[in-house]
Length: 135
Image 1 (tube, rainbow, N blue to C red):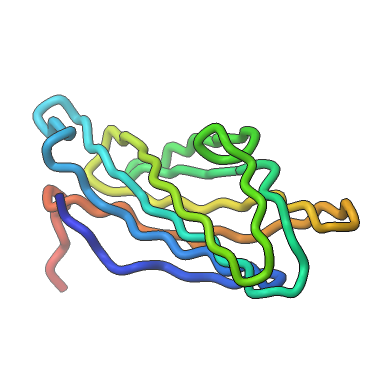
Image 2: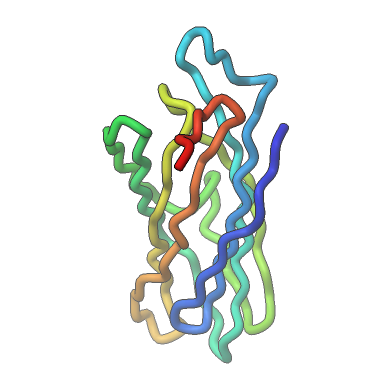
């Protein structure tokens, strides 16, 4: 298991931090299977309670193939975050290449019922099997 640093972004007083982790024990490079977990921390830095309604992901592998994933909530939940509260979860994704990138957004609902988008920062999925070019 190899972990890199966290990626952070604040939108509308909601901070999203993501830490990708390459899962050596779940990956099979000989079969073109590379698996990552990603830990997400969502913090409400605002003064209103919000509810995470939907997620939207774009996952792009090293060959440029992109998959979009849209759905209700995260890991089967639609968490409510009061001011100052945080919510954390871990999910994962497989890729057919040794590296890739993910980026996305959450649809949040304010106390008044307004839906607004919160950016998930783009983060790199890098395995120890990635060959870095020499410059």
